[in-house]
Amino acid sequence: MQATELVSAGRCFEMDILLDLWMSAVYNDSQVQGSEIGPVVYFRNGTGSPLAAYSEMAVRWGISKATTGRVLKKLADMDYISLMSFPGRTGSVIYLHSYLSTMFQISDVLVDKEEVAMVLKINLTMPDEMDETDLQADSAVTEHEVCVSEELSSVSKSNMEAVITKKEDGFPVGGLPQV
Image 1 (cartoon, rainbow, N blue to C red):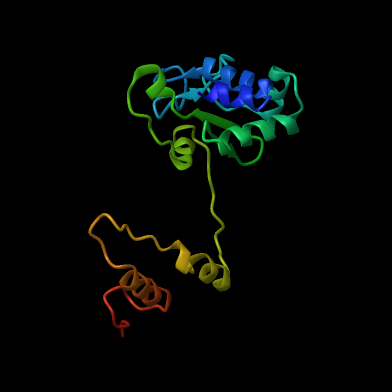
Image 2: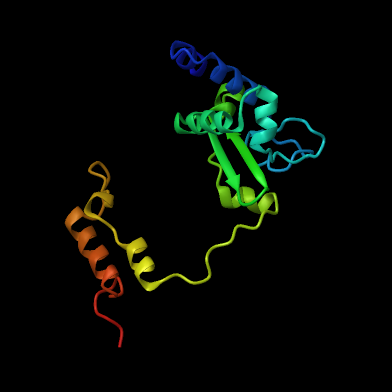
């Protein structure tokens, strides 16, 4: 199905790249870091690390680094891969979506960037100090971000919005401000 979509879009080189990623996938191999988390792309360079630079992939596929980045972003946007870029010259890691269900008829796994960083021993740092206005802007929740299931029993949308408003105003979720 993925190949059909890309061929019908007239983008055979994208399909070639996707097929190369699938052919280079490794799952649960003790020799490849991060493969226990999910199906990771490993270009078998002998290091055991799935980290790859755009420049290496560009040479492999015979395209520019910019085109490599655009193709990988497009494949990620189409939900074929999880592309995790790390700071500096660390490189990127690619995990495949639908690999386990296609190859082994088992449920696919969700791969988390923080978990990958921990397994690969990559330091992800957060800014130490945040401006008060940045903190308030980050925590503000708009009406459209509140989702309440209509099928499952849950808190009503109006009550959920009241709780969020109280929390944003500094009130504890229980109700009254602490003294």
